[in-house]
Amino acid sequence: MPRQKPRQDFRGLWNISFGYFGIQLAFALQNANVSRIFQSLGSAVDDLAFLWIAGPVTGLIVQPLIGYYSDRTWGRLGRRRPYFLAGAVLAGLALVGLPNTGLLLLAAAFLWMLDASLNVAMEPFRAFAGDMTPDDQRAQAFAFQTWFIGAGAVVGSLAPALFNWLGIANTAPEGIIPPSVRYSFYLGAAAMVLAVGWTVLRVREYSPDEMAAFEAEATAPIAPEHEPLVYPRSGPAWVAVGAVLVAIVAALGLDRQLYVLGTGLAVFGAIQIGVRATAARGALAHIVSDLAQMPAQMKQLALAQFFTWIGFFIVWIYTTPVVTEQAFGATDVSSAAYNEGADWVGVMFAFYNGIAAVSAFLLPVLARRIGNARTHAVGLLCGASGFLGLLLIRDPWWLLLPMVGMGIAWASVLSMPYVILTRVLPARKFGIYIGIFNFFIVIPQLVVATLMGGIMRSFFPGEPRWTMLVAALMMAAAAGAMMLVREHRRDSAA
Image (cartoon, rainbow, N blue to C red; front, side, top):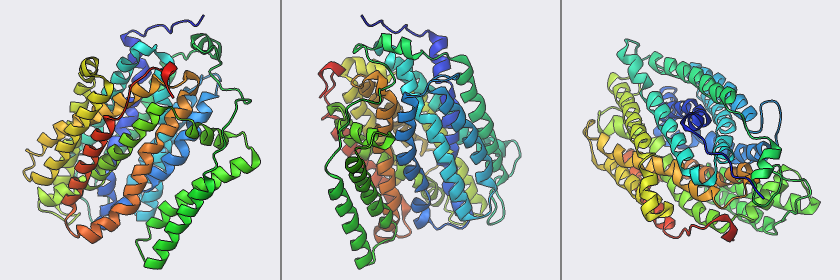
């Protein structure tokens, strides 16, 4: 008979989730300041999306691999914790390096390193909450994670403005990153290592034998190498689609960033062809097989995730140029007005993350009444209204109003899909499936990074505020997709 996992008390839930405080502080610094850094180093607004491309490409590669290996790891530090620690140390180094480079391409390389490291640290945390809590406490565990995500993001988003308030300059000559931004990234590096270190030292993971005893199927938590694999036949089709897209881009002289998308599709197809031809049994074969066998609810959630993350990624990239131009009348990145506006974006982002931290504990209450899927749809519609507010409002203080909707949406994005997902996944595969689920976070980011620059030049030249309309429409589409999700327990999943 399977044993029930013990319920965690307040201290246990705190320790399991505390590392997310440092991770999200680092993410908040990245989201609120990387466009500012790129513009300070000479990037044009139209090129910002392409320079952010390191994030989605890195996540697409790193997250499923880390999920696969963390499902199979057991050592002195446990199953997930070695990845937390390695990612935290590498991210700390990247946070120190990013604001200290004077070259745009080198800054983009540091962003790649930061994204890779954050993915290594972050991806197992979702699975970690599933590992350490019983099914009926899962929503509470993700609420704690969301609270720490919100709290870390508040500190990270406000950091440049706070350092400026302490008398540290928020302006610098052209090509130099303001001291307030550099000090904020140093703070992020320290917080990343210390917060993740707290979780690593304070939580004892369940052993493989204990996890096996908790499994209803009485299977080991580390998947056996003899597990039957599925080898999809669709590889040639993906290669053909990618090759056709590359050929069209070359023939019509379209935006060169589309080469990234076409090449990515072709590589995905080539991987399928390779694992099928060789009957491979390694990490890539398992990822391809599990991708082909996703539960029905995961496929339904994937569509909503796709639209959701297009919306959020657009907002993160373009809020700084929109607010600095629309509310502060500044386009010169070395001017005091531009840097005042960029600091205000940090305040806005801090405000929406504060709203998210509060909403984290209110959403489960609503979910008990109307269900997780409908609760998430409501949250996404709140986000759509917030994004429209960024398009229409020009007064800096009134720009905090759209952040309320954005904060509610963000709290829902960080919790509701995972509550639904972990109820239909086998616990022994939390890591790899959550890594695969993140495909539907990073693929839309890749789409934005490759397409949005061309869309800007073609339809919104010199008017970045219209990107907020696109983001709002994407969130509304995501809310519609959530209404198609049918919640079931694992034993009835397809």
